[in-house]
Length: 221
Ligand code: ADP
Ligand code: ZN
Image 1 (cartoon, protein in one colour):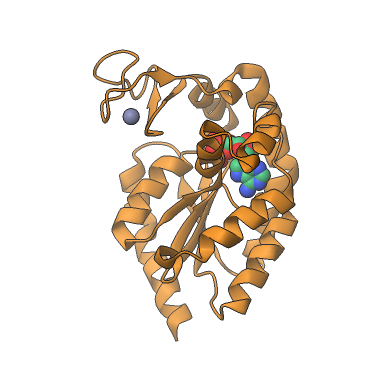
Image 2: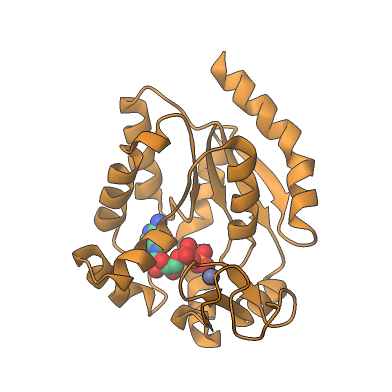
């Protein structure tokens, strides 16, 4: 299964992605997580990315595309993948098409997480993430058992620098300008399946799963 998950920042891509990857046994490739890992170890990619990410800007296409190209060569991505946060621009989408066609494979489906703008802002400003394992929490809706501590690994929770109110508005504008048009790009290819980005994520997965399965089967023929 070769999939993309799209949606505004805060639309619940991460939560949906973890359900999808378990269900289909495919690697979850989040360019945001890859950049944050690179920033932690201050690699050249990390140092470049940091300047953009902290301002809520997109990392330049060349850097992002190269990172993804390398990731797609790894063994675990040969039989499927789920991209989260990539592509975010038309050139990234076109680059992905080229990479896949060179491998003689195609995307099966693009899941588009849909949600109201008000809810997005509430979600992002209350979001906390684990400083070690990237698990997501929310100060109201998804509290950890012990305040400020990750349930999974016991490390402190932090607020991402790009989750402050001002940066959030900027990220939403960047999303609307650069990434939203990609939905039309994939709609023209007949690949888009809309999923609810609110309510119970597992339930919203169950609603779309039969369609995802059918699209995959169809592409295999
Ligand atoms: P969110 O979906 O919450 O905005 P991500 O973790 O996907 O967060 O991305 C965080 C930041 O990393 C983005 O705001 C952007 O600066 C950078 N980034 C991630 N993926 C890409 C991409 N495909 N192209 C350019 N920049 C990216
Ligand atoms: Zn953790």
